[in-house]
Length: 168
Image (tube, rainbow, N blue to C red; front, side):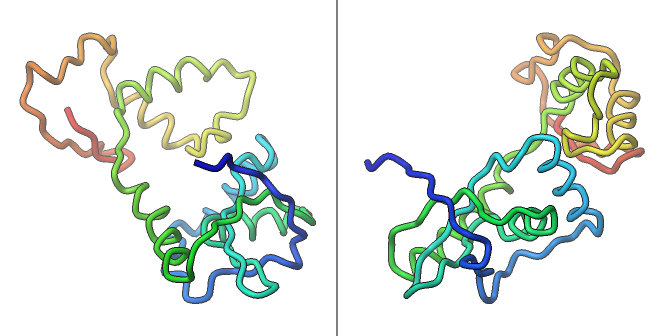
């Protein structure tokens, strides 16, 4: 396997993927992305595919737009080497794979409580204050070790405050 090599590409040479089927469902998503980039820097390289002299963004179109609005003039990128069909499959698979996982909300609550010391803006987690408060207030105090799913039958529960579902 070849080692990944990050290349820096000027923003003017990067183009959105035509016909990108992934759309933003949260009207505040763009502002949230900008806040995360400001807080953490641009930590996740774009994945691009070169066709002729143009680089098309396979993964990271929304991060690219947020970074441009923040004034970034070049972006860290990973160049995908493959056919057009393989590149399009990569773009689809990147978005689809995020659907294969879910939050373990009691563990997430533990992490949020760990970092919610007042020294950082809790929203740099990607969760807004209301979501964090709902998660912290909704779940009873418990230690992660007591949440042994092997001895219980799993059932999906939806938090009435924030609407997130989790497996109990």
